[in-house]
Image (tube, rainbow, N blue to C red):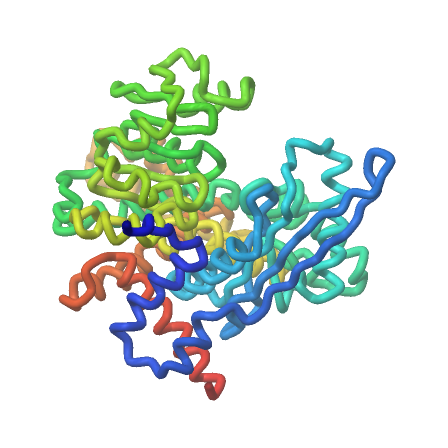
Length: 477
């Protein structure tokens, strides 16, 4: 009797995908191994006096690659946090930063905790103590290791961490750069909260600029009217669904959450659903669409595009045969296991890989880090000068039109839109759009240019690993 097939762990899945790519690359075995393994993982167990007794918590900070420094990666708060997960996420951060040409190595952190079980003041004490343990070992430092928000953390936690770092490093003028994803009033940057979801939108927009690629996914035309199922309406899933439906005309027909799913072939109003989830804690009882208790059934519905934006391993060996989507966009980290990835490839399903799709967060984190180091808001020096130049051009055009006898001038809307200079948000979005387009092109060149590279994931890994290898070689390795 054959033993049941074991699903690889998250870390093993990342290594399997790494090995697929390096098999087609001219790298020495020693360099391959140096890139693949995590440099270090720090485990901390600390106590905090809460509710009349000492509570002990376990946290991790893993550094995968220091071919470039500082290293970068989020901190997640979840009961599922473990060393294998943190090391896998750190590895993905290395490849992700290399793919989108952000000058960071890869890192990741996590604290094994359910934030919903603790009051806000208790979470502050826990977060500050965790930050203290990491700061004193330079695992939070503007020039060495720069965390960011992840699952279970956000602007609030980043503000606590940066304040804790300042208390311990009172003369560090660049202290604000020790973490990214901060509130605006604590050194954050406009567009960071939406960044990962906006990156998902930009990655899809770029894909649909190439009819040949769209055809490979069994689709045609543009994003307008395409049916989409989104798993997870957290920060990433919410912003991706919102932008794709409101700005690109796509139709969100299914949303899968922890308490089930909402399905409506006519389209789901994302803002209304988000408000409902905020008020009730789930999708059950939402008035627009049908509630499906077993959310996995909606994940397996027919749709043009499936966007898993929740936890890793959502599509695995147990449900891959029931996945009907021909185009999967990995907004989460590792949502498709290596076993499922292999099965989907054999069926001709096109997968846009996580290390590309969700790179919007680290890209805008990079912009925030640069802003903190330069100590000036983007656009502050040139915005009004741009507006003055544009206004001169508009005035001259209208003068010439009037002199030529034109009965109408330029519309007020055109003048307003054209004259207005780019502020921080516009510059951030422009930089993110350019990053996602350039990164897709680098993958596409490999995907279409090499017959031995059958999919975008392998192409992404080849590009990323090649850049990391070049970084190590420049150091003399």
